[in-house]
Length: 330
Ligand SMILES: [Zn+2]
Ligand SMILES: [Zn+2]
Image 1 (cartoon, helix red, strand yellow):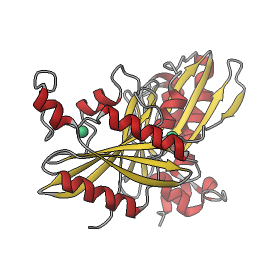
Image 2 (cartoon, protein in one colour):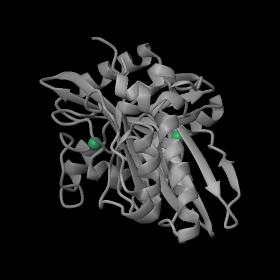
Image 3 (cartoon, rainbow, N blue to C red):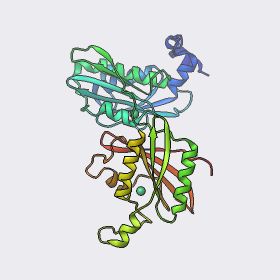
Image 4 (cartoon, rainbow, N blue to C red):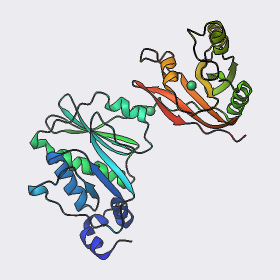
């Protein structure tokens, strides 16, 4: 419920169809952390505060952008971060950058794909802020924040202002960073195979055609390598895995014949976290480039002999991004 002073102050925007009383409450439920300075921040903060949203700024703006505090019924429950490229907001907010003289704004939802975010912001430099363009940029920034707060924004939405001040919306790429969909029965089969390998790391490959994914259990060749040449392979199979090269080639031939492709490589951490470790990263992208482009990695962590957590690691623009993989009940 809005209070009387809130209704008086925000009367005009409460009348708007996309705002209303619920919308006004939504504008007050976010706090904006502006890490930019200058007129852009001053203008954005003034628009946001007069719209009923609390803003934190690095410095108090002066002059025409002196502050009117927002009237809040209760403390804001969510934070939207506004950052200059190449930083990204955590988890939701707006990135402000520049690209070939144009100013670019990307609004980011908490559940937006971080791979897509990286893709659209990779060429952005810090925003160049000539004074004349700052008010326009600040007001658009406030607009994007309000759309996000009101729940009107897509997961990722971008605007560009050309060097002569023309506004355009930016296309969002089709996402190629989501983990593959693996049927529960295949995950259950994977868990059984990895459990059988305990206390050593187990590994397997997921092969797929269209959306049919099947499991190919693999042997962890690390034990043999370690026994044969502990200098070159100092880690035992309890803390490392290797695919046998011959078995791997045979698998690729088989996949080719069947018209399948390698969807993912899975391995277990018998007594550890589900994070994609530094070793895993080195193995999967030895020279900073993925060894197997387009192939996902899946790490299943065990505790006390039971699977407890799993994460996908997917390559996106220079690094592996991790997302949780829900496990079937066992
Ligand atoms: Zn994506
Ligand atoms: Zn690992």
